[in-house]
Image 1 (cartoon, rainbow, N blue to C red):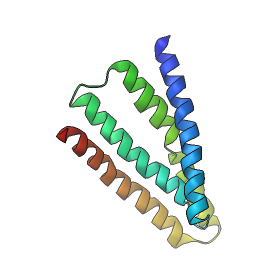
Image 2 (cartoon, rainbow, N blue to C red):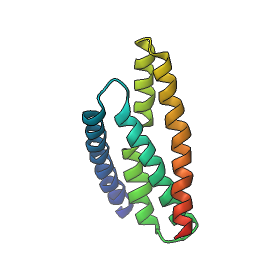
Image 3 (cartoon, rainbow, N blue to C red):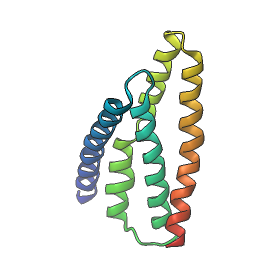
Length: 124
Protein backbone atom coordinates (compact mmCIF):
# COMPACT_ATOMS: atom_id res chain seq x y z
CA UNK A 1 0.00 0.00 0.00
CA UNK A 2 2.83 2.52 0.56
CA UNK A 3 3.44 2.51 -3.22
CA UNK A 4 -0.04 3.89 -3.80
CA UNK A 5 0.54 6.57 -1.19
CA UNK A 6 3.74 7.67 -2.93
CA UNK A 7 1.90 7.66 -6.25
CA UNK A 8 -0.96 9.73 -4.85
CA UNK A 9 1.31 12.27 -3.18
CA UNK A 10 3.46 12.64 -6.30
CA UNK A 11 0.36 12.94 -8.47
CA UNK A 12 -1.18 15.61 -6.25
CA UNK A 13 2.02 17.67 -6.17
CA UNK A 14 2.51 17.21 -9.93
CA UNK A 15 -1.03 18.33 -10.69
CA UNK A 16 -0.77 21.45 -8.55
CA UNK A 17 2.69 22.23 -9.99
CA UNK A 18 1.36 21.87 -13.52
CA UNK A 19 -1.51 24.23 -12.75
CA UNK A 20 0.73 26.83 -11.13
CA UNK A 21 3.49 26.79 -13.76
CA UNK A 22 1.08 26.75 -16.69
CA UNK A 23 -0.91 29.61 -15.21
CA UNK A 24 2.21 31.66 -14.54
CA UNK A 25 3.50 31.20 -18.09
CA UNK A 26 0.11 32.11 -19.58
CA UNK A 27 -0.03 35.27 -17.46
CA UNK A 28 3.44 36.27 -18.66
CA UNK A 29 3.19 35.30 -22.34
CA UNK A 30 -0.55 35.38 -23.02
CA UNK A 31 -2.87 32.76 -24.40
CA UNK A 32 -2.53 33.20 -28.16
CA UNK A 33 -0.24 30.13 -28.19
CA UNK A 34 -0.20 27.22 -25.71
CA UNK A 35 2.94 28.52 -23.98
CA UNK A 36 1.92 27.17 -20.58
CA UNK A 37 1.50 23.62 -21.85
CA UNK A 38 4.73 23.90 -23.82
CA UNK A 39 6.63 25.05 -20.71
CA UNK A 40 5.17 22.24 -18.61
CA UNK A 41 5.86 19.56 -21.23
CA UNK A 42 9.43 20.70 -21.84
CA UNK A 43 10.31 21.02 -18.16
CA UNK A 44 8.59 17.68 -17.50
CA UNK A 45 10.65 16.03 -20.24
CA UNK A 46 13.81 17.41 -18.66
CA UNK A 47 12.75 16.25 -15.19
CA UNK A 48 11.86 12.71 -16.21
CA UNK A 49 15.06 12.39 -18.24
CA UNK A 50 17.06 13.50 -15.23
CA UNK A 51 15.20 11.22 -12.83
CA UNK A 52 15.35 8.22 -15.16
CA UNK A 53 19.09 8.57 -15.44
CA UNK A 54 19.47 8.95 -11.69
CA UNK A 55 17.43 5.78 -11.19
CA UNK A 56 18.81 3.62 -13.99
CA UNK A 57 22.43 4.73 -14.31
CA UNK A 58 23.31 6.05 -10.87
CA UNK A 59 21.01 3.75 -8.87
CA UNK A 60 20.32 6.67 -6.53
CA UNK A 61 16.52 6.53 -6.61
CA UNK A 62 14.79 3.61 -4.93
CA UNK A 63 11.48 2.13 -6.03
CA UNK A 64 9.37 4.31 -3.71
CA UNK A 65 11.09 7.52 -4.82
CA UNK A 66 10.74 6.52 -8.49
CA UNK A 67 7.04 5.90 -7.89
CA UNK A 68 6.65 9.26 -6.18
CA UNK A 69 8.65 11.35 -8.66
CA UNK A 70 8.61 9.60 -12.04
CA UNK A 71 5.17 8.03 -12.09
CA UNK A 72 3.27 10.24 -9.65
CA UNK A 73 4.78 13.70 -10.08
CA UNK A 74 5.89 13.58 -13.73
CA UNK A 75 2.81 11.62 -14.78
CA UNK A 76 0.52 14.28 -13.36
CA UNK A 77 2.76 17.22 -14.24
CA UNK A 78 3.27 16.61 -17.95
CA UNK A 79 0.39 17.38 -20.21
CA UNK A 80 0.65 15.50 -23.45
CA UNK A 81 -3.10 15.04 -23.67
CA UNK A 82 -3.51 18.78 -23.24
CA UNK A 83 -0.91 19.31 -25.98
CA UNK A 84 -3.07 17.32 -28.37
CA UNK A 85 -6.26 19.03 -27.22
CA UNK A 86 -4.83 22.54 -27.67
CA UNK A 87 -3.23 21.65 -31.01
CA UNK A 88 -6.60 20.43 -32.22
CA UNK A 89 -8.17 23.71 -31.08
CA UNK A 90 -5.55 25.64 -33.07
CA UNK A 91 -6.32 23.54 -36.16
CA UNK A 92 -10.05 24.08 -35.68
CA UNK A 93 -9.36 27.82 -35.50
CA UNK A 94 -7.46 27.63 -38.80
CA UNK A 95 -4.06 28.16 -37.10
CA UNK A 96 -2.25 25.37 -38.94
CA UNK A 97 1.19 27.00 -38.62
CA UNK A 98 0.79 27.50 -34.86
CA UNK A 99 -0.55 23.96 -34.45
CA UNK A 100 2.43 22.57 -36.34
CA UNK A 101 4.85 24.69 -34.31
CA UNK A 102 3.27 23.48 -31.08
CA UNK A 103 3.76 19.81 -32.00
CA UNK A 104 7.27 20.25 -33.41
CA UNK A 105 8.53 22.42 -30.52
CA UNK A 106 7.05 20.13 -27.89
CA UNK A 107 8.42 16.91 -29.33
CA UNK A 108 11.78 18.14 -30.63
CA UNK A 109 12.73 20.25 -27.63
CA UNK A 110 11.14 17.74 -25.25
CA UNK A 111 13.48 15.07 -26.55
CA UNK A 112 16.48 17.41 -26.46
CA UNK A 113 15.69 18.38 -22.86
CA UNK A 114 15.12 14.75 -21.89
CA UNK A 115 18.60 13.89 -23.15
CA UNK A 116 20.04 17.01 -21.48
CA UNK A 117 18.53 15.97 -18.15
CA UNK A 118 19.94 12.46 -18.57
CA UNK A 119 23.36 13.82 -19.56
CA UNK A 120 23.53 16.12 -16.52
CA UNK A 121 22.45 13.31 -14.20
CA UNK A 122 25.06 10.97 -15.67
CA UNK A 123 27.75 13.62 -15.22
CA UNK A 124 27.02 13.98 -11.50
